[in-house]
Length: 96
Image 1: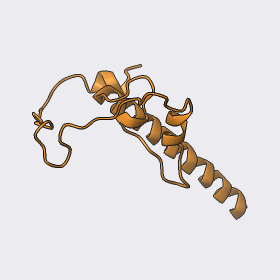
Image 2: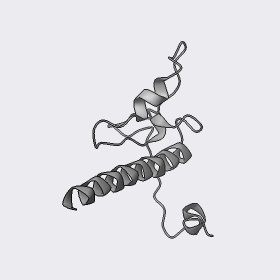
Image 3: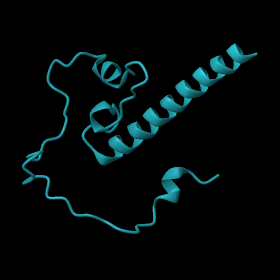
Image 4: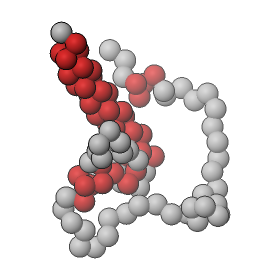
């Protein structure tokens, strides 16, 4: 079975970012502060109702990286899908 990552390997287009001089980000990224709470990542990526979070800031394995943003985005999408399917199942049960 071909993974989603393998499907995306072939570069079709690219964009060069100058985020170090971007006035909106000024080169910022997330990092683990000294004395950080052990459950910080769990709190950051916890869903809020039907709102799910992804991004490099919620990735424990690849914090502050594109890999982390991608992987956590996939995770958030799967969690959202699971949530919706669970609600749909509850909806179907009410109809019968």
